[in-house]
Length: 58
Image (cartoon, rainbow, N blue to C red; front, top):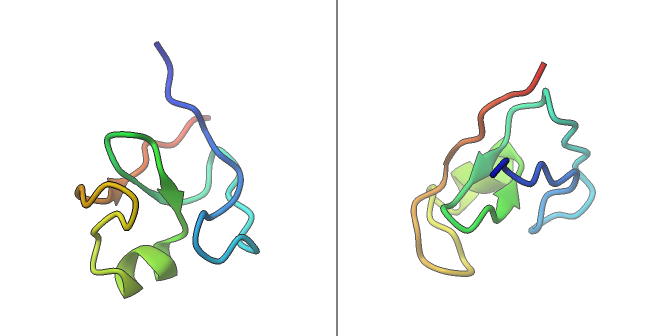
């Protein structure tokens, strides 16, 4: 089962996140741009889980 590579930050909505862009995700695949992830101290506001770097696809 592959990760859903969401193309927008769930917090600022304006950040475009193509599959090869750096992003942060939680175990539920909530997706945030790096600046928003850092602003939230790498804690998902939806589930309280840890935000980690999203793997990149080529």
